[in-house]
Length: 113
Length: 115
Image (cartoon, rainbow over all chains, first blue to last red; front, side):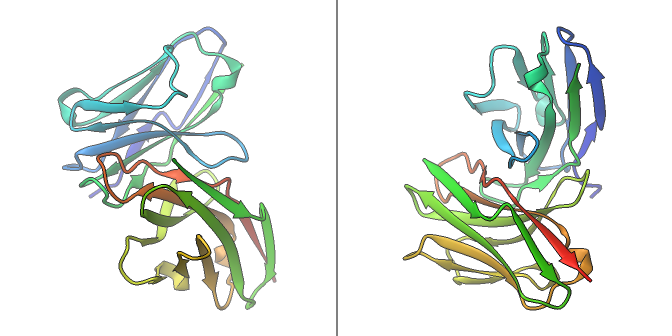
């Protein structure tokens, strides 16, 4: 059990560019969550998957955001046409079962210039 | 709908003193409650959780929290602060049923420990 991993750890991009983040959950965890954390705030829920199915998306997730979890393993979060307001820490978490402890990855810090 | 209010964005204590971090929640369903700790540039680590069993919950590193339904509170305490406790602490709530269990976090409390 190597924990939840996220790549890259840091991403600096220019406004208008597309970025993609990857999350590798703990193996056999069927639930995967994405959260966003801005400076001075707690994490906010974005979306979650049960296996490969995306079951809920927050209103925070505009149409520029898309998340996938092919084959129910790793997940990607893509942001198209990035804006300065997208600058944040993007956190991924996984849990073995519904209601189980969510284990968090170290996050990907996005800076949009 | 659920929400969490953490009273005090910054708490400062002396090493060896009592740590008390306050959390009040609002939930339309019986809640699950959590305390997480976040060290700089790291993800969140679970300290403890309440899932409708014992109201006094013991966690890692000597922390504990008590669920008080009448006060809608879940305050975090530690009898004696250690320098290594300096970090940001987040209280979170989720529903205890349904299919989601997404976490709703408070804004966090930064704990500093003075020597």
